[in-house]
Length: 515
Image 1 (tube, helix red, strand yellow):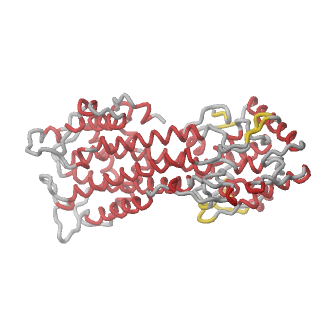
Image 2 (image 1 turned 90 degrees about the horizontal axis):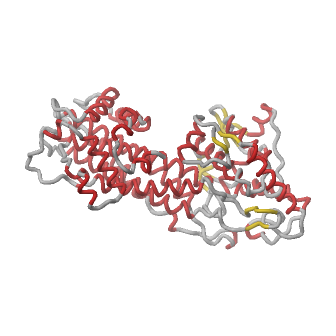
Image 3 (image 1 turned 60 degrees about the vertical axis):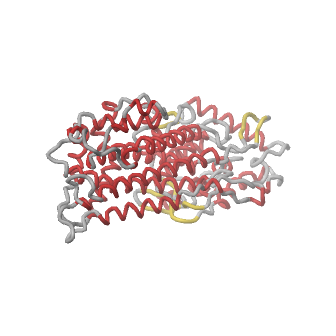
């Protein structure tokens, strides 16, 4: 059981709550803390002293005083007026994650929101009444204002929700379920929409998808090294101790463990090849650097999702601070870094796929098929990989490098982290497809090494692939094979077959694998 506002939330725990594998609730002590902060806000609302967002307007209207009898209208209007998002709805699971992250942040007890509001949001999470949130409209500064406004329209009985596999109008659904809209108290609307939960929810998904990409990139690279009779010497531990980046060492040990006792590798120890192309030889350096970027993002994400990103922050009725905890820059920069790191995993994977088609390895035919001419082999399969990595390159321009003033200059520097987060996730999803294509090529290349066997571990991997995708002797609809390969990666079946703890000897296992 996870306790909102109290326990430490990790990216993996957040994903487990989304999937229902981990239950979450508010405990008695947290409820008391939240209720106390709410009483402080009620007291502030009745005072003469101006406190932003409680008895004043918002943004450039921060100097406009709001009378006590209009504070509830103010909080309702902020949700209505800020619900200006455009574009396609984000995925239902990301919207659900936004709700989870917002509850955890509000439950810290510094936002002055009522337990009634938190209970309604938790009810939505537990019953999968998930708001429809447009993907565009946030600049990632005063919180993710537009998407968070859409996220909480259902509290007012407004907007739309995903429910039982279809989009429904909230008002219609609530009538069926006999659910009444809430009336928001002072500061409630502001507390709901100030925050970085749109950026953070996407970032959690980037952490998850990129982690899976990195694990499979090492595994598939090892398969390709075997298929193309590459050397294992570039993965020697002594070499990497001379340049001891943690990510590099971890990847080198991973590849070495996968190649251990391979008959294929032993068969060419005395060959006259001096060194392999970079896409085989430099796997630790390239994959390792991307692992380090992933670790940086993971650490930033976990600080963020355990933080208060509201404004103003309520310490007591006599001590509130209007600051900038909602600014998305702490995630915007590492997300751009992770986006580039993910793209590089795709770039080097595509190079290995291309290398496998050249026919320069003994007994490996061009285009990975013996009877070419009438058959095109894997030629166009690699085209798809090339298209995906090119698309990723165009998505790698750092969103955080841009800033456009908003709110009549009150918000004169914005992070654009919401855009960077969406792009980073798109790049990661493309990389899954690129790795799926390399998986096809590597498995095909291994077939031409027979009767020699690879290591026990890689034979298990190859056997599983072949249980799902047969060797291609002639042309067929390779799109079906690509889709199967992508599903293998998404299912994490290969890493589960190996049981990474049983073969991973890296000193940095906890940092890179246990998240």
